[in-house]
Length: 425
Image 1 (cartoon, rainbow, N blue to C red):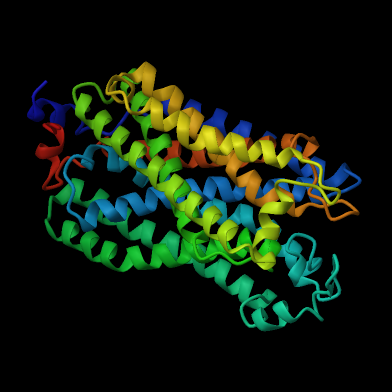
Image 2: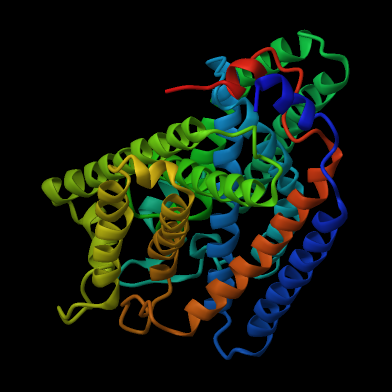
């Protein structure tokens, strides 16, 4: 199909009949998942597990949305052409930010009602193993200007406000251009990208530090924000491929996407696989080489118990080494594994699953027993992680599908649309 025919075929609004039914199903599944998670919080003797698992779920889903936002901003700042036909689906997904904010509110409320329940440093009387209390800890005292409940709340509100604001500007300019074709909307999005990229980089880094890294605030790492960024982009690319194949199978994207679009996004997924490995290895190697107790304890918790025995998290670390790097790296070396739908789709689901395991690896070891050892990975907490992801993910899918029929399938009047439709390697 020619580019003209493809643009014409995509000029009408997508049919919302089947999409509306799918959206209803997604919302139903999401609400059930959230209800089961809430039930776990209500009935479990130790409620820390379900709550921390919910933190895993909200961080995982938010990271994917942040990755989509960053990819759109990068698209505009470099004036990319090949990704124009894919960009619209990311723009639809950005509507989920406001719902993620609402879903994060229970954690914020819990932080005020019961300080220290999720983030121990919020309770100054919290007992530290071998360190007295948080309030008497010199490390906390030095960081208290940054780590305090008011700052945490204000920063979290600022994170979501900036993400929602950037998303609204990007969507408005892109959708309006479909109607009037005015080049000013392209320039507006470039200006938004110039402002948004540093905002996005700072907010995602501080979100990772506040929500995840501060669970064990004694730990030091200068690579943490970049690690989180790598997972954000990898998750966004994986979901992007899954959406592309879904729309292709429905018939929407036939005549619009070609093999080279899949190859390009597959190459990006391959590149960020290497990037994640570089960041993660650098963090581990620097801490291992320095051998400073204030830094090595974070990995010790994820390798051995207090008696020197190997814990389950050591094996999870091996899963990340092979599952997060070696398997996707070797798999995506193949050209056909990047362009054949039946080949690229499974590895994208695999990458999403391992990113979730990575989030568990960073968050759940903060749950400790009486000896100060991290609770095992294979426990009931894993069930609450899955129900949280299903619940929050279901709401995000519903939000995407509700936005889907409101705009053209592709940005038909974007200046780069013809280049995108005829994209070649």
